[in-house]
Length: 486
Image 1 (cartoon, one colour):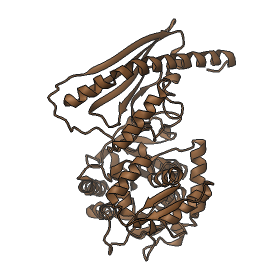
Image 2 (image 1 turned 90 degrees about the vertical axis):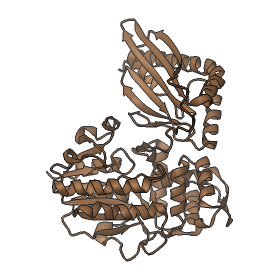
Image 3 (image 1 turned 60 degrees about the vertical axis):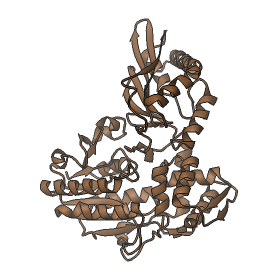
């Protein structure tokens, strides 16, 4: 059986590519910096998972690989993100050549090299050239706006249209683009991996509709059954101001929004480099792509989201002096319940998202809005139905998950320090003891003032949250006893 190496498998596109590749009869090896993040994936048992980083030693990952799929990007993640992209791509290309990999397939971005491209699109093109530095054949698929449940582009579009009936917009809303559905992107990637036909070095892919961003917003409103949105175009909104507005209204973080907004200045439509018809297939139109994405969102069938990737947009930044030393501030509470560890863990792991946090919901919402105003994720990201390591959970991220033993969350909200929230379970024949620990490592004086400033609210929120978890666990236990279900 041929073997494909898939990078970015914890991300939006890579996480959806694995299953159809396996179905096509390929052995799939996934490269992941944190393999534990893939443990909860539906396809985890069907693939080989190798720990590694695109910029590190890839000898093991590349061994006996026929085709490598490069789906890694660092857009907006720090001031040197573009440089890091090039270095990682060159490293990947060299290791692929040394291992005798036959082909590298790379998903990049549309845009003419003759235009004054945004930093994002320019880096996308340079990554394609960097991958080829080792001499391996590179097929660069250039796509524009990807429409699919959970994609950054779709979530930005969805929130802007649903939240704002009237929008003050910059000139970039009139720029033309050629959106493509995520399902079609996956189909094209699979054909590119599995084909024995000759492939162009650059193949532009897009759907059949060429629209402006304003027309795309209007189409979304129609499909979603919303009233017509009014757009007031003004020349004064810079990409920086626009991205801050997008970061406030949508789940897309400001650094990522800025790069996406700046890219919207460039026209991204298919040109002379369009993929051959047999490779492009018959992609669906924008209206159908939006309809499918909305339907999947409404029923919660979103296998991957853009926030699943190893983004650093919301990670804490040391802006305060470190003279506070190794201070660790804690709020620890322990309760014993007759409920089983399974019921308690089910209750703990159901927290967040639409269910909420069992206590002080209005306080959580206020904290979420404050976080959004400061450029953090707020409560907009929600959660997956079944949690796994690395999943976003409102303004937290799952750092450790051991069924019936532990759930630990790491805060990605804007904080003058580092915060974690942990539940440890210890079960025996009499029931389960649950220890809930809120831990905060402050940065400087501001960090200490923050903790002691919110401490009065902790006395209300944390006991209520633990009591709510216990009540939910007992409800689940009683339901199990009544229905006879495990």
